[in-house]
Length: 141
Ligand code: DHK
Image (cartoon, rainbow, N blue to C red):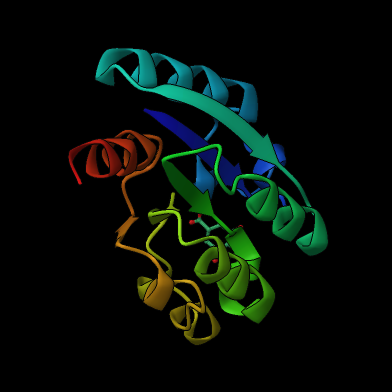
């Protein structure tokens, strides 16, 4: 089984950005965590990060026919992007939405998720472990 993990804008700034909210571990730490977790679960993984909505849409489209599942933290685009939700629906690859924090417990504007209706599950507020859980959900689907 092959899973594509997609991280949206500012996730590359982990360790620097608002450490009281997102923690002190870096994006490189997250990549290591995901690779180790995938190995433990016995799934293949590729990891992609972009700050650009169109690049994320392109990557989802390119995943068609190549991956069995998508783990996506669209970050701020969660709350704004019809295009990313449409791309996930278009390719029809089972997807799980992940957030490091719990956006539903933060500002009002973070309570909307455009991707939630097109994802099989949402894992939020569990930090790096949320990515492990999301891959486990996809593996066991
Ligand atoms: C990450 C972001 O960058 C925010 O824009 C989201 C999400 C929450 C997270 O918790 O991983 O609102």
